Amino acid sequence: MYRVDLNCDLGESFGAYTMGTDELILPFLTSANIACGFHAGDPHVMFSTVKLAIQNDVAIGAHPGLPDLIGFGRRNIDISAQEAYEMVVYQIGALYGFVKAAGGNMRHVKPHGALYNMAAKRSDLAEAIAEAVYKVNPELILFGLSGSELVTAGEKIGLKTAHEVFADRTYQLDGTLTPRNQPGALITDQEQAVSQVIRMVKEGKVLSLQGRDIPIKADTVCIHGDGSHALAFARLIREILGKSQIDLQAVGFK
Image 1 (cartoon, rainbow, N blue to C red):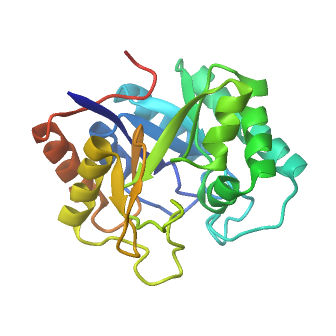
Image 2: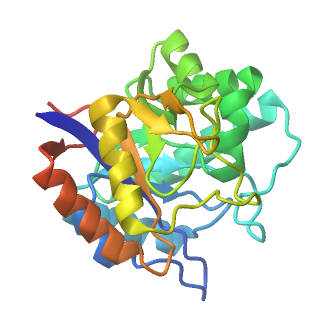
Image 3: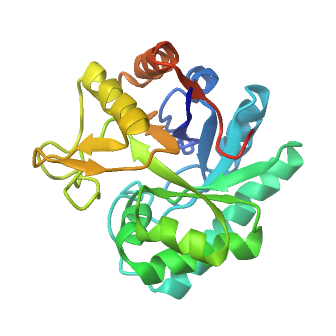
């Protein structure tokens, strides 16, 4: 039997603006990455999402991003390693307060968007983020792009890590995600996305956009909750993974 975690970025509504269908998609997940107020989310949304995750027995993680509400944290900002460290400590602490108040436990940390992708390549940012997580709580699990500098930094400092793969994104030959502003970055065919996940989990391979297989490790699979077909896809992938003898379980649970 194969085993993998199924995670989704949640709590990304803000004020009067609603993003995604968190309440509906949560029952299909094993882990939730909850925005911490920098790229999305606000105190009310954070607390509400934490309580929903607890009600659905879904593992809770902090989802820190760059301070860029307008760009949804997906635009690169030239930050220093020290700034990355401070941003991540701040945001983990913010979400931890709500998790504690709701009677839950924080299980992991997964950076968001541009911060995540920059840390996948830049060792200084990766090490700063890993140190921030470790200093706040060395028991937290660090999610990072499979095979990336972020996972390497987490392992080096002594954190438990999770190699993350993406259902609806394509890959480059170096194992990085195809940038969203480039053609072919997103996989819109749901069956193709599910097939990619099954192959990553069972075979440890993914077909790059250049047409060559590359090795990949899949501890946790990210599905996006802000698309128009997000709920239908969550239901579909959960069903097909089960039929493919792939057990769904949050990272770190036995």
